[in-house]
Length: 274
Ligand SMILES: C[S@@+](CC[C@H](N)C(=O)[O-])C[C@H]1O[C@@H](n2cnc3c(N)ncnc32)[C@H](O)[C@@H]1O
Image (cartoon, rainbow, N blue to C red; front, side):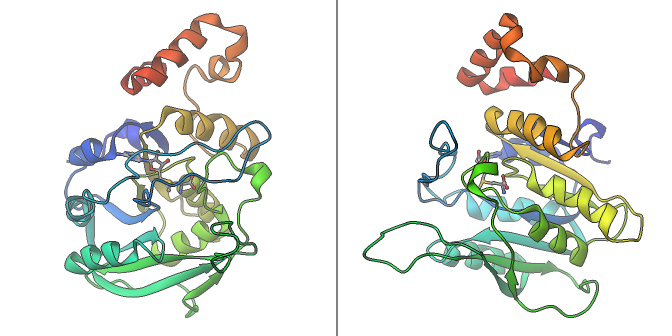
């Protein structure tokens, strides 16, 4: 059995806990993901118009053990798993990932700027942690790199998502842990940065090999942003739905606006747009 053709190299709107069950055993070559933090995160950063939205499954981490089991099931033997986390949720993610994987490192992404937090009572947060685990044995590509990764954060003005990750950082990770034609899974895709990183790796790596990706995202707003914003500004980097021109001009299309509203109330309806 192989991965559904219509899930390849696009972002699919839905609940990854359900969708992952449809992925065959040992069907992906890398999992690179940035899960909800379990801390009810609300960014204080603003776009030009409004605060960036909160996201789902961010109030508890009860789902982590079963989810790690699923990640282990869908990964091929001799593959890698990268999972973003932060200092206060690291113990949960580390413990569960170490239960199924050989944890090789805690990578530290050092940003060029810092977040806000408790302005008077805490140090300014300027890094994130990435649990790096292996299923079986897989060598990292290229030269030996440090476990400290200094990469610029996405500038606020270009951010669609409160925790949007820089494509350049993800590209390097994809290049370290995949070969041409491999499939990368991000079950918590947000605005699709991991998919953009796969595309960037395919062009940058010089081996001419495409990296494929499977992206799941629960929130239809982020799926739309991934398709409109990511696509529009970065060229042909994500799947273009057949009705893309409708999606791009919702104000001219009252019927579409109605469907968008319905999609907010019942996310499954959003699937009808594809
Ligand atoms: C930390 S963010 C990922 C941001 C992403 N790395 C980016 O660069 O845009 C986690 C995402 O997981 C999504 N999410 C939460 N629960 C989910 C679920 N059950 N299935 C799929 N996505 C989910 C949230 O809507 C949120 O966008």
